[in-house]
Image (cartoon, rainbow, N blue to C red; front, top):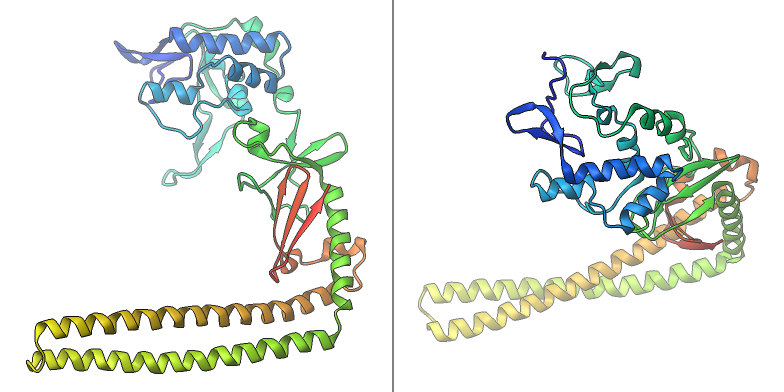
Length: 365
């Protein structure tokens, strides 16, 4: 392989491919100004988030937006700057005039999966193209530890980690550590408030505490509902469902008669016992009647199904809440939480808990 040959199809932001030599990078006058501004801001002490804010407010084109303009790719929200984009630019040695290869390699020669290689094993060729920044500037702003240290992803397996979502954008919330606390944060909002305005930041331990208290209170309220009340509800619901089932049987019998009349009418037309005009009129009436009956059947089946779900949910609720009847906070982590909770959604200071038995709870902070 030729030393310093840039083999990727898309050149790094700030450069373009030399039309006379596609393996060589040359400076792109427009986008390179953005790269230089990012390094300049970082050198002045701007945080990543402040750089993102500055670029957005001053309408600097993002790499995705710039590439889209050049017809190279299409990306959703392409005009929104993200912290990850700025970090990648600040850590890319291509802006020193280096060509860096061997960052990844295939796990197996037939596999499409690739693994990342240690930085010390990268193949670096210097002076392959014109640099955008000096080594002095790069070394001043480029500290790998600091660039990714402000807020780190939490790898620990928290009880609710797989259940918490942003109510606004629908994405899983990010767990971040700050000092000795862990907070839940909307990943999109953290990247840029334009992506999602759910700027929630709630202490995870506080969520667990409040959720535990909510579940205990739910059990206490539920236990106050006597067996008599439950039996009355079930008896009333069963009577309603029996009446609906009888109506459904009647409708199905009527549907069978209408279908028989449609078939008979068709046979009469084949035997020329009825003319075209009478056939069309009577056929239209029977079809309209059949459609109306089918609609009523669909409504009754839906209502019966919903009532069955309510009763099943009530029985399931009893079964699940019985498991937490003597639950103490220290035992909360041992609870099979997915038996109890289907999903948790967070929006700003409000938490919505979707229980597996159909109930939805709301917790305010």
